Length: 294
Image (cartoon, rainbow, N blue to C red; front, side, top):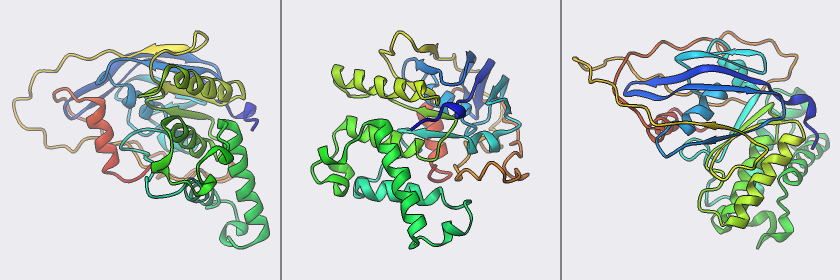
């Protein structure tokens, strides 16, 4: 799965996200060429998840400046969302335990046909089926998930997958439509030492193929660009209750064709957020989950 031409450069200077309860993270600098593996390290509550969501246009940056694939944030959040993807973010993009591997893959493949012309409206056509099969095969090959190694092949339920297999499936869903940047959360959560090495190698391979990868975890490979987040000190409590609603991350929409004009809705900036006490990345992810599936 060659995505060399699709990698996104990332440039961030002193970026931060402030929510209704304070800073999720702040003071982050990143300078990465297309096809870079960026490892985000930090303790729980230090804003790792929020940083992933901000760099993919799903959470509004409130401090500093940033560009992803040459697009400024937060001014072009809609376009950045259409050219990036997220995977394995708890509470934001979750696998459904009752569905099978094949059902997840087919559902994701169908979403990509929304803006692809007449063939997208004829799911029973030969052309449509061949395109869907090709997308699925390419995504599985890229993450090295072989259906023949699963208990029931593509009919295996997510609940019966090993953790490393579920991670591979999540990443396969994320890269299926060729994003220029992929953000992956909790890369090595509850994995053995050998599985952690496999997970990072999978992401390194994707980066070598050209896709820029931003991944939160520990034990990042030596050749990764490491970015560290730290806990921010709680702000002073406001004298009066904050009436404004939080600036919640934005729900994903399938990416349109490159030739399709950008809509005003995609790039419409969100309202600024007022000062308030501290928020954790888990709370921010929960707020995003309430806006709908990504």
